Length: 253
Image 1 (cartoon, helix red, strand yellow):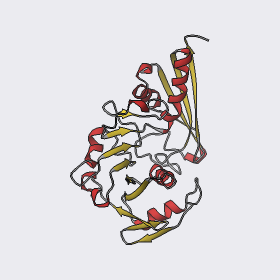
Image 2: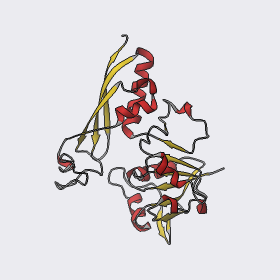
Image 3: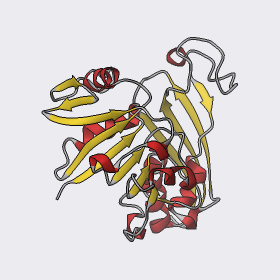
Image 4: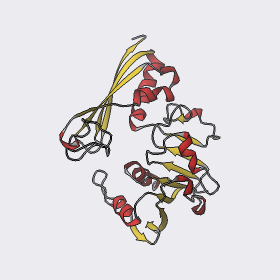
């Protein structure tokens, strides 16, 4: 049995998910929704500045593109409620736009012609189970229709904090993520769309102090650590790669 997947948002996360799924037996991406044309999406998949060339054949077709001979349909709907995932058999949607990262918004994919389940590739809020595998995935029952895969930093932080807490007892902690720059920063100095003076600086030429929600989100993954961590971020001039430092006060040596 093949699990058919749709991806909403074919940016950095969406494309990396697509690449990974190509190597997973029994899982297939059948549809992508993004507000651009198939030729552009195929080009961005095939040629990636930071990840290297895609290891496979990509060919643009009417209404989508083929990857190693398998057709992937491409649509450009702004509203998830208008995406006909069922037409292509997509049962699970990866919500990777960053714009529909709450349960209420993600549930727009679950209409009559929609999907059966949604995985948000970002923190999803208090009313959604936030999952970091090998840390709290055992809380899943299979009955969930919307879950969150947390953020990249939370996926880095949670296993560390969990191991420290289980073995030594974690009283309080401060985490700092040294984080590659992202698409919400300016390439050259210019007005930031969110009004942030720091992120208005050229990303590849500056170390930019920034906020992070990872410390707060740890409480969604590990409720016993809720409120015990605070977090800081430094956006650094590299296009990929990040690390997280955690300084903690423990109950025992």
